[in-house]
Image 1 (cartoon, one colour):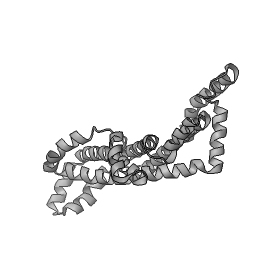
Image 2: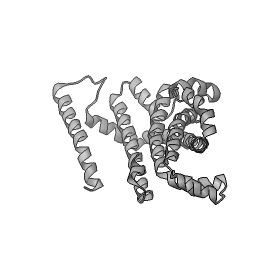
Image 3: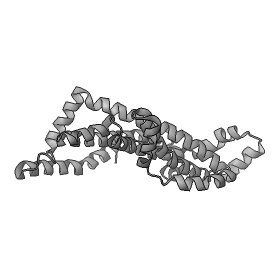
Image 4: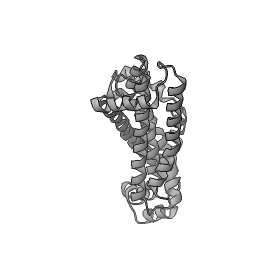
Length: 256
């Protein structure tokens, strides 16, 4: 089955649900302050796309999500390599990781607001904190699957630590690390929207809150739909990159 056929089959259920909802709302009536028919949601989304408000909010959300993703995943990758290659570092960091990892990202919002106020830096900080932990833990897990004999050969050849990481460790662990990055992309988008709903007056999350407060359910659901489509597009793009870059990798490594 081709990817296009898979996507079309996947769209069958949501399109059927939308059609049933449209008919039910038009024939049985509904509370216009709470829900909106799918046709009105589609018109609201089209209007918001035409006037540029959705696109401007999207860039704000993506800037925070991708900035936090780059910072958090970069630091998480470095820390994961350090802890994964050094048992002493893993022992030293184990308690700190177990204490800080369960802290919810929203609990960091007051601290980030005190440090940075409203705006992009505050949102990036919260997103980076959340993306750091999955990358750290999954990088450590990826290193455990690197063939030990490769590391032994690198040691025999006298490779420096950085050369060992660049020539042996990263190429062997790259498929699993990319899976961690894909997970981080989804987390970054969710956390960015959450921060905007909770505290930061910008982006798609703030647009959702404004639509709800102004009793515009059609715009609120339109933004929800747009966020879902945005996450879907990012997932499809990363899956395509993964298939192209790691097509010769062992399947169990890529899908782990």
